[in-house]
Length: 298
Image: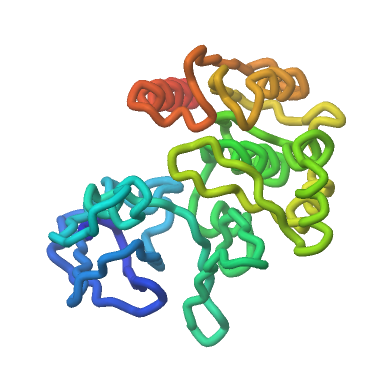
């Protein structure tokens, strides 16, 4: 794994510390790092990095360039290769599927997502969800959020109005927990929530793994509902949504736009786009949207 960053890097693979080698330092302090495993790992692995980088150097980003991954040769049994998770590693693919935190003694705690555990997809720094914005960035930020991240994006703008300059949402899903509880769960899933504290809902994408929804997530969602009244956000907002979205109806973005107090709100619908909007042309559209908004914000 090769990447560039400004600062100090610690790294763990499957919870075990690995050596981070410095390969070069540029005049402005940008450092090239390399992480190489002594023994190849022929399975999916959890890679966690702690980055102490120069605050404000590149706004809210941790890396100035993409992370490059080199994969070695390996063997697989004949069969349905599409169901062999390690196949993703041969193309250098990455999946962000687990959270991690640091214990008081420095121990790395990895959320395994095993049965009975609730997976939370929030970003924390020293236990505080907004500390990333407060401690890692400087000045007004353009915040981008996808799906549930679009909900968190709006909550962030409400809680830190002086630190957020604009918003870009991709299939933004504020209040989705309430609509899921009201219309999206069958009797068996409701019974699983009561009995086990979580339930699985179908996943229509290629990886096929069901979404695990915890009862705590649904209960916490009720404390952060936004669409029961006007949303007092007066910022430039761009909302992108695919009309073939099977997870969050595209009409939801229109509802969000109606509730936002500000006038500078635009909704862009993609007729053949799904929930993820992750095709090359979708990503190019997102980049154009972000670039245009950054230029507007100066």
